Image (cartoon, rainbow, N blue to C red; front, top):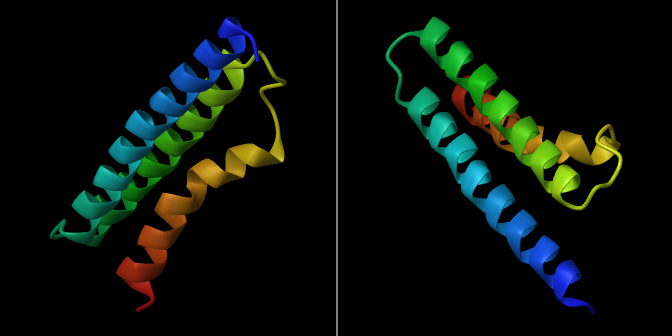
Length: 87
């Protein structure tokens, strides 16, 4: 594996991890928000941040941006919505 490929993998995993943690943090903020409208807004923001993490990962590798793999970025928001509203 070339040095360039290793740099791409390290930077993309680091970017996705850091941005993904921000998304999960927004989900936890939504779970403890006092009003339902605030919870919904924070979950939407968490979903957008998760999508940004997926786009960043794919952009660093110079892959096609639009892919079904971007839906993985919505996972924290969907889990948060399930736990927050349907438990």
